[in-house]
Length: 352
Image (cartoon, rainbow, N blue to C red; front, side, top):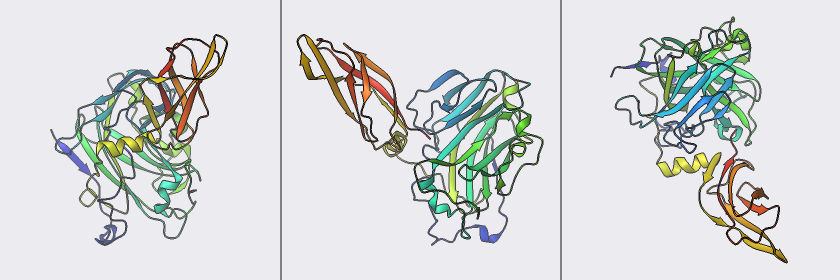
């Protein structure tokens, strides 16, 4: 299989020195699950017409009423790079004439502000960012890579130009440090990386914004391909990586593969589910009626108090009670004398 590398170095000063504190080859990856080996939600979902993390953990599908999609785990990956899976986006219902405000970013990664303080954003010492990603599509042309400071509504982009259809291509793009707009050191969604797939006219007609500035919608998808205009279209993505500093295809740090256990725990900060039996213990009894409760501790402290859904109850209906960032209770809102009352599973979501 042919592989293509893209990325240019602008000067000899772009490469960090060996003793730089930003030499991150052995550091924790800034992007969690960039190799797409954690799929807690499943391995395929069809008829997708909404936002959210659909299958690969932390990989957000940013959707604005443009087409219908199947998103699936794929074993089609770049040869010899160490990746096991990619994420594949198939257009199943086309939209060749999207409304002006329609948009599609098949993949978007969301950061907490506290995780990017090393960018020194909004200061005179702001650090450059290098993003690397592998793409494969039946289409040739530009997929715009967008960096968005959501807190200050500032944005910068670069075109990822696929020149060979149905061929894995590695892109390495460096973005200057932004000396305007600091990021809050908190657990809120402050910063994102996204790849445009398609859009309506609201997001086209300007000039691709390749320097930091206030977000202008007309510049964001200018020159982008139309991924949603034909059911033959597809996009595969893997190896999403972000580094601090200026690199090219030859100098960027090797992809930082985490062990499965570490990567899973980092993902479970944002989402996890369980399928087990939590027996409802009797907490009070009145005549023939018994009220029950069971407790569940999360595998890791979550980013925020999660939304609890899809509670599987047996014997009596349980609801989530007293949710915290570390644990949750399940209790009965009615009474039942059944001794076979338990919770068999639930989902916990604290995604950005």
